[in-house]
Image (cartoon, rainbow, N blue to C red):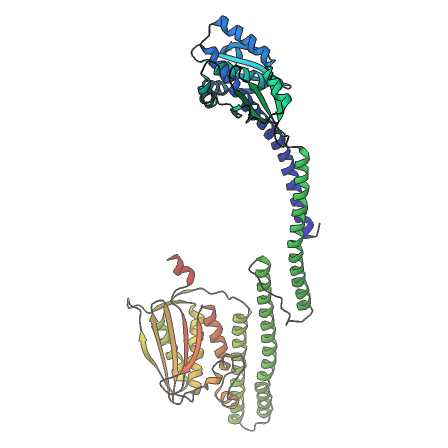
Length: 538
């Protein structure tokens, strides 16, 4: 299963099968609950009425009433004690609260329980196979027996009171002969004292009619609806439909995902073949969009590293050519020198060329280390005042005609002059800036710093010719020299400022070039005084 679609679809299919099994069990339980509730709603009013009437009878009268009503219902009725029926405590509590219980004791029959007397712990029970026409006939008989005790005008009100008090689960209504929707045959049967059953509109329910003798009322019971269980076929149909919709949805989503991943795969293949210009669309904020953005970033980084590598190889070959040629010339001339003084002069020149080569190799190694990736930096608090003084003291003697001094230095609000940095790399950056300024200055170089809140600014000014604004970014390009002949004469290989920019980049800061108040160039380094992770922790 290498396809993403098949994996997702297989998982969804497994889940759907599990849901179908759980649904089948839930459907069975739901149908059972609905059947119990249906039976309870149909039987509750009738059994409450019978139990209420029995509550005021003597034991002999209860037995006679149970026999009579049992024949009307077509089911055996018994008056028993709660101890005899042995109900669970939960069911017994419901029964004592006046609820009618409908419990399935055997597979094909249901027992109905209704409380007769809480004091005597008597309960009326009846086993019902199905609630049929006999229940309707018995209910009407019991209701009519109650109503005939009242004047004809009060019978509708009494019927409403009975429906409310006994909790009948269906409608009870008194109709006149004219308002009852009956045909002639049904009216004749009512006049003969018979009970009439008729289908309601739609044919999904039954209404039961009976005439109250001596009055103009016709009692309507119902409509009584048949409880239709949810068929298992419905669950299968819903499952198949759900499976189809899920499959279609997953296919449409995964198809787009696979297409986007195939684009990434093709781009990676082209990059591996050497086409570093390859990019992929990075639209969207989802995981694939973020992956595409990361892929493009990786491709750009690889392209830049390879470009830097090619530039470095080319530049190194160019830089090595001059000192190697001078070394060869020096060797030839020293061999032909006639005096020790001349030979010493050539040897000193060769020694200078070797120092030049050593400095070039050192700068190349530093730049390569900074460009390759995140270097290992050990940040600590560095005293900027002490650092500036130390570097000035080391470099100032190298050119006696240039005055290298400390300018205006602004400490933090608490009087401290520290900033978090990597000491060796920061010293290297400051040394490169001062060396570059001394190389181009006429007579003066000035170093200053300022700590403003959580930001540090370190500046090196000179009074040289400055740098044209159009070339302000070019000076940071590796091996690039704006005035090649002058730079070669004064030393340098075009890597110093590139190293500075990379060092301050890994400190989370930026390097800037502007115009100095001294008339020349101003190189500025700006970085956070504290590392971001420590600042957040603090």
